Image 1 (cartoon, rainbow, N blue to C red):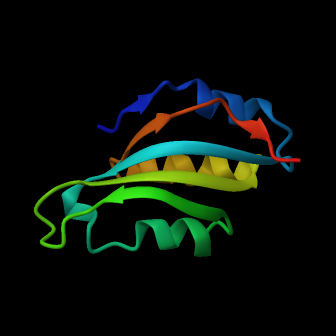
Image 2 (cartoon, rainbow, N blue to C red):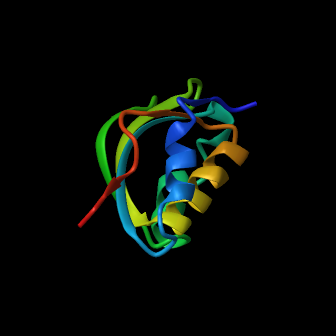
Length: 103
């Protein structure tokens, strides 16, 4: 089961107006069995989010989990849905700050 810590950031997104533009910074652990999946690319293509990779640690051999430090911007409702999708993939999420208004 994936870990979301602290979970207030997911809750904060739900409190935002669904169409409001928000930006969050989150550290994501992608399980090693998801290495073949285009996880970060899906955030961009499937959800239309703006994703900036601030840092990453990913072994080329796929034997270890991958770690990403991401700045993600998008509509609050869409961003919330995308993060829940990551949790469904058993990714762990660590939020640096609460969701902020991107204006």
